[in-house]
Length: 242
Image (cartoon, rainbow, N blue to C red; front, side):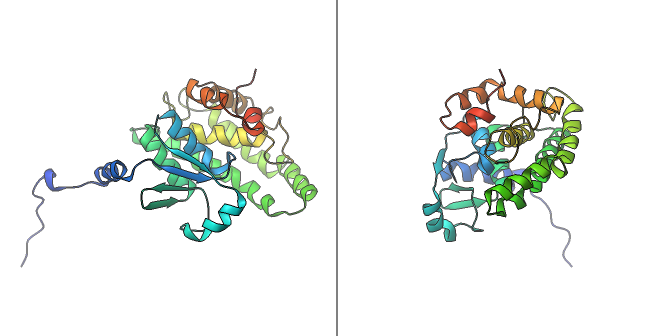
């Protein structure tokens, strides 16, 4: 009868973390593929930029997207190309970029707080997702205006409470994390004009959110990133308030 397996020592163990480091070292420069708007690629862009990670920010238009759609894992963008490996799902891409950039807290509790904020932001965005399927521009605006006074406002109340009760300067304590950037992108996108029907002053009634968004926009690396922006969406929504 065989006895229990015996571990011969740590030198033979290849952890997932070690594999990921090796994979990154051989994959070459990451290529982030998305449309030329903030949307679901902006958090990854910020992570790479803040962390000083060399990456290619590849923009596609609708025509080229139709050509490459079948080549993506789920028929969606953004995708991240790492050598021969293509990664889909914005949450997976964001967490990968955040780990490379040092924006995932090493403390388990702080990491959980960052993830709590990150995934609640997704809950907020899901309120708006059905409006992107409305073809008529006026009907789409009307739907978003109603949400801004209803279901979306309810989510923002909860997010405002979360931000107001954070344990430090940032959402997970004293260090900038993925959670902060997710909140920043969400709030900035809603007030930028990218989603017609949402008023530019949508977060003005939430003091904690307005102040927090401005604090993240004022982080030197974030401010520098948007100082180079050429599109009105980023100029209007993502820069610090004067």
